[in-house]
Image 1: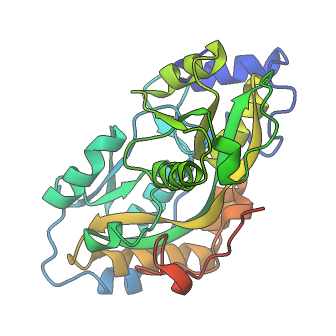
Image 2: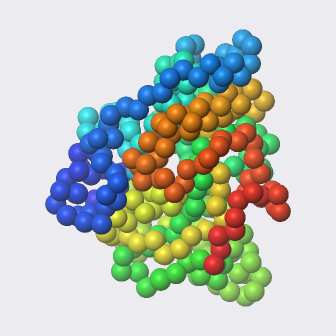
Length: 314
């Protein structure tokens, strides 16, 4: 079953019939429909610029992925309500600022223009902080993220951890993503050494990506580690064979210079202190990606030696 068709009820059905016998035991999809709230954070509110105008008055408008990409985002059993770790974080941000949450599902291609134009206040799309993105957006970190390579379960590919491992492979990546940049950089290095070219493959949705991988039209999928591990455990049709070269900061993304990032960062830090942040990540199996403190516009991918995150290449 292509992942895009999964709602909460179909995920639970797969689990009950053993299709995901290795599914993450920490994730209880039914229980995770229960909303986690936090108290209004007066320190975060005080950091809002005087007269700040939200996209919708009285609400925090947060754009999230419209695709089903658990544990980040998935449809609940009513096939309308969106749940997931990014949705939980969005609610904590709204609560902290004393606002209602206005959640807007969209495609990856829509968030940059929507944030820049003021249509959305915040984007939560598993967005990695990069040097280039910091020229156009402001960031408040809320997770770390490792990118992972997945292959179909019976693939002859055993390991992808370095540039030579992708030589000659067709790899699905998202357009404009950090993983695309890594793949293209690795391919450039390979070509300089006379190795076969890697071919980036772009698809429109997760269902198409799953179909392409399972049919053998592509060799690998390169995306967020949390999603890759979840899919592999749930369906048993894919397996993770390696990670990208670096860990990245994942951040709530806002319009450049509008002053909202500092308030968001304090909102996150408030929930770290009060415990709701840890509860959210724990229930979605992301505890190993939690941060101890949110930062505004930290060194990111492409910042060179100043990058505060470790090199994870093998």
